[in-house]
Image (cartoon, rainbow, N blue to C red; front, side):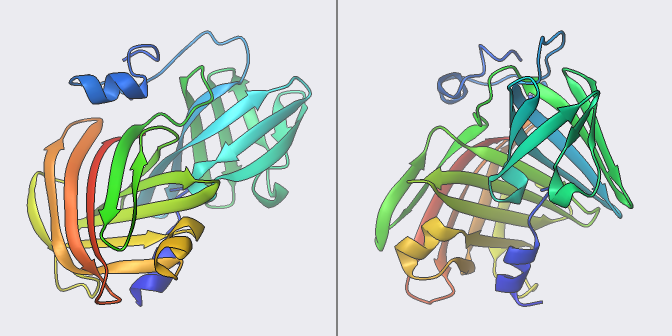
Length: 260
């Protein structure tokens, strides 16, 4: 499959206390390898983990909810930071994902969604409705450096043969997303990158923020190296160096990501 088409199609629906794992805390020390979770919330407001089962693939991403009583505002990072104005009727939220089915509120920390073969479990990670899931820096001689130190959302996918990490942020309101895929698992080591399936790793970039930097909203690393320096139960750290498929733009990426 053409890697640009894959990048656009492969949008995932694709964790330590909230106070100690602020983004500043993430950068300043060694985070604990414990998934974030909270209980006993008085409303739905917060950062939520979204775990989807689609065929044999598990897709994990995040969303924020702001509880206004009869209405709930949802921002879905896995769908390009799409906003939803949800209506609460009894124990369900109406208006999500083309309104094909309702989100069922089990309690203020747990929700579910089922439609046909799509099953999603929502679990609250933090009572603050903030994407504070790590940091990354993308630099090049061809465009200004992106230092994403807040508003960082992370996704994770596992198909059994490939694991993927998706790093997203917004720059001046425009999305920038970086997708890193590695055969077998996201394990420590250094791996060759290319977009044609002849190397273990692929790295793609997309989003309107990329358009303003290199003149296209989708690009792949044509050749380069992915180095994963840490892979824990929650945290993944590493770097990417490479040449984009315009054969002109060199990019450097460093990241510390909290998998949802």
